[in-house]
Image (cartoon, protein in one colour):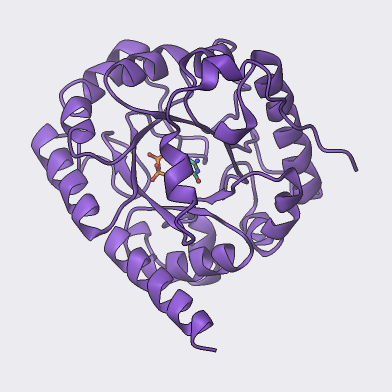
Length: 286
Ligand code: HH2
C-alpha cells in the first residue's frame, strides 16, 4: 500500500521555530494537557468556563508536567449531542483566557475545526493547531496552517460509527486524504502529527482496535498522538462515569505509547506523567 506523504514544498514558509520538534526529541512521550473552556464537554463541561478557574487549571497542569496545553472552546463530543458553537461565541470563551495561558510559557494548541478561530488563536500566541476533522471540514484550514507555518494535529473522524467497517483501513484512508490536502497546501511534513481519533465515529471495540493496532500508522512516518482520556469506550469495558475513568485512561495511554504514540492528550496530567515515568523506568530496568 502506498501512503500519501506530504512534500517539503513551501519549506520557505515553514521556517519558523517548530514548538513540537524539541519536545519530540526528548526521547519520552510528550504530555498534552486538556483545557476545555466549554459548558458541555463530555467529562469536564462547565468546570473551566470561568476564566479564573481555567487559568488555575492551566497552571496546575503546567506544574504537573504538561508539555503542551490544548485549549478548546467548542465541545467535539462525538456522540451526536454536542451543540455547534458560533464563531463569535468560541472566541468569546477563548478571549479572556488564551493570552494568560500562552503566558505560562508552554506551547499552546488550539482545538478547533474553524480556520477563523485558529487564525485568531495563533495571533493570540497559540503555536499548534489541533483539527479533529483532519483539514477536511473547513476548506480554509489547510492554507492557514501552511501560511502560519505551525504544526498541526490531523485526527481521523467520521460522522457516525459503522461496526461493519475495517476501522484501520478507514483511518488510513482518511489520514491519507488529510495528508494529500496538507501536501497540496504546502504544509511541511515535519509539522504534522497524526491521531486515530479515539471515540470519534468508532464503536467502543473500534476504539480499542485503534489503540491495539496503532503501530500500523507508523508507516506514515509521522508522530502519533493518542487521546483516550476519560473516553466512553473505557466505560463499555469497565463501567464508570467520565470522572471515574482514570485507571482506564492510564491503561489505554500506556498501551498506546507501547504501540508507538509520541504524544498523549490527557485531562489528568500528574497521574499520566507518573504512569509514563514508571512504565519507562521499568522498561529501562530490564
Ligand atoms: N478528543 C477530544 C477533543 N479533541 N483532539 C485530538 N487530537 N484527539 C482527541 O482524541 C480529542 C481531541 C474530546 O475530548 P475533550 O476535549 O475532553 O471533550 P470535548 O470535545 O467534549 O470538549
